[in-house]
Length: 63
Image (cartoon, rainbow, N blue to C red; front, side, top):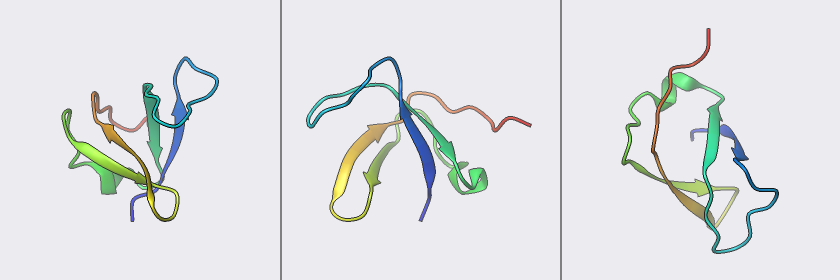
């Protein structure tokens, strides 16, 4: 299981069916190193899945 903090960019709320840019801050960055732009991720907050995301950018963790 890969866990990350998530926040939505430039909007106050994200309703069902809406899209927005989001940022992820992985709890364990080493588990996320295989991701690259274009990869599609399924997002969960329990069951069922709550969304999908397409990776548009990957940045190394801050030191």
